[in-house]
Amino acid sequence: MNNKGIFYRISADWRFLLSMDMDLIRNSFEQANRLLTEFMAEAGNIEKVSAAAELMVEALKRKGKIISCGNGGSLCDAMHFAEELTGRFRHDRQALPAVAIADPAHITCVGNDYGFDYIFSKYVEAHGQEGDVLLAISTSGNSVNILKAMEEARRQGMKIVGLTGKDGGKMRDRCDVCIVVPWREYSDRIQEIHIKIIHILIECIEKQLLSIETK
Image (cartoon, rainbow, N blue to C red):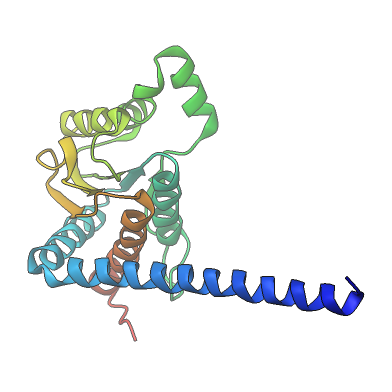
């Protein structure tokens, strides 16, 4: 086969692979859009997001703080939530007290001495106070270390907002507000809705607490 023949073969293969990728991309966007549409269509979900924002605003008004926690991608979401409050979201404004349980020294210390199940609860035990809010994130709703953090938050007199998925798992009935993304397959779809909820919570906090209007 000459060079020209090789070029046409490579081009045909590339076009075939590109077509496959475009179908995958389109299907992924469509699936995500369907889940978001279904989530929004349930009026109770909108009310729960509003109720979660109210809990957080009340805590911050009373000089409380928000502690967030999660595992893996959910920890990244917990960190993102906290840094948007202590830094800035869309507008310059005063920093707001929020912290994600993400200190590697704390996590490895507690994990080594007590076990991974206690990495969040020991932090809540040390830093949680009555009037604070725990934002607990678990796509399954059954992560043991999240459930233990929630138990400790209750002992400290904290309010609990849960972000979860599937049927809500064990978290469903242990939160003051539990927002469930009803998706039973891959966790990434649940996390995509979680991050949208997190951004909306921050928008609500800024509007209600600091009178910052979203445009």
